[in-house]
Image (cartoon, rainbow, N blue to C red; front, side, top):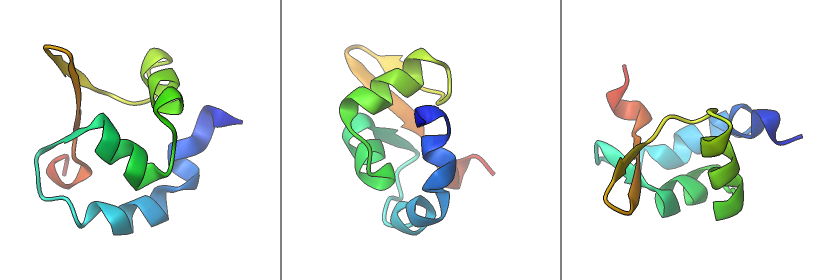
Length: 68
């Protein structure tokens, strides 16, 4: 069921993402954009479904605005 969490909420997330102009987003931002819990985000990281970087103790996610 969690397999396509991000794909299912992509349209809604795209609308929310326009509020963020930063190149990288923190975990709290990603959870808010996709309406998911922190544990779901952790699961997505662990299964390799969402790319991320670690800077110290902070997880960073490349904003979709900066991918294209």
